[in-house]
Image 1: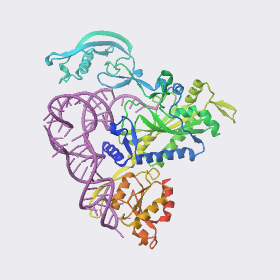
Image 2: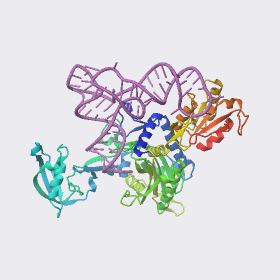
Image 3: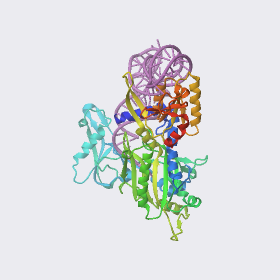
Image 4: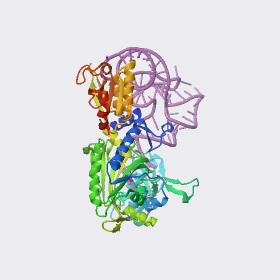
Length: 520
RNA sequence: GCGGGUGUAGUUCAAUGGUAGAACGAUAGCCUUCCAAGCUAUACACGAGGGUUCGAUUCCCUUCACCCGCUCCA
């Protein structure tokens, strides 16, 4: 299956079955925002619950918190977000490539300025100005060629060769950042893109009321470090875990829910003694890889990318990206960064409050260092959807082939754990028994009762929802099993497995015991 | 933000400057003893806004969304 095809099919299935809808759909949508439908909400809940349990319930060294999305603006000043979370971008007027304006290599040479262009035979002219920087030693003929390309845009002329750029003057420049280092073409005026959503606290929109929707959940954990440490009565190494929404005004949301403007993060800030950072970075990498396997993403689909020093954030001394093979490319699911004591130091300085840790053993005071595994909820959901999606050709008894679409979620992630069906709905005894079985299982797992149409249809519907088990109440349930292990025994049901479509008989009384460990 | 593409029912796809069809799916009923069977009925669409026109889903403009490339990605 072609990858673009696969994404399209996944998006269609998400809508059809109620995993994910476009936000504000009836008003034409909102770029970069998505809603989770009934199945999606349960899938997401299962994912977050499992992460939360993995971090807090199943280990002793991490405690949870739930910070507010709005925080004092001073937090974003201290963290560096307010100053650096906005990028000045500039664009090459010829190639349309975009560059960070503050990362342009300064250029020196002679600028050839054009005041316009004409193509008399075509009765066409332009009076836009355009400049090309020709470095010393380069041929000045290059300027005219590039200018032709520039004026050709939007001219509708068949060939740029017909265009005659009109040169106005030349100018010597040194260390200019106004021209594309790759081809010398003039760059557009830099425009600032602020990636934080600005908002006002209180009804009055003045500057003193400004703050931002958080662009990451991490800062709440740094800011509350002292409080949490105090109440948790933990020693280093210990961590704080948090799940919550974050907001980034992305220039260009893309790839379904992969990059959206409102998204959810699962982050741990893990505090360690100075010097132990690298060791814990490795431990966390292994820990997280095992976790992804536990939710059904095979190890060989995860790529560990070691971020080079040049590409790391300036405060990080080591970063791994865990990437997944999405249909649209290998992309980041989670970043694991050794952040040193940068964050606590910033907040200690900015707030004037001491944030040191006192080590009882060595009687020393120091700022802990931090290793941060930061995972994207929505990205992981998308990975689960991509990993689960499967089509298989099945042939029935009469030799007819058709395509079965099945979402092969790990049972612990599946939104619905078990579908419950009376074989026939016009037999009251079957219906009553099926409803009784549902009541039996309901306290332990998400169930779905369905009596409409033929049994095969109901199975297939559950396949698309990714429900791992189906239970059918049939006549053998009432009259006693015909053969097999439970021959003659009443109150057995058919248990149907999603992945293999295999069926087995099992007594109703054993269902809970059988199913519960598989979905936990 | 730039360039390219696409917008008709939940999905896949028709047709048309003058009443928008189908298949599958959905819902309800009947039937049905294990993998989307059958019969009957019902509901649901021209992304939005302007313009041209007697009349626009169709032509034009704008806009919005989605997809691809560039870019960006704490």
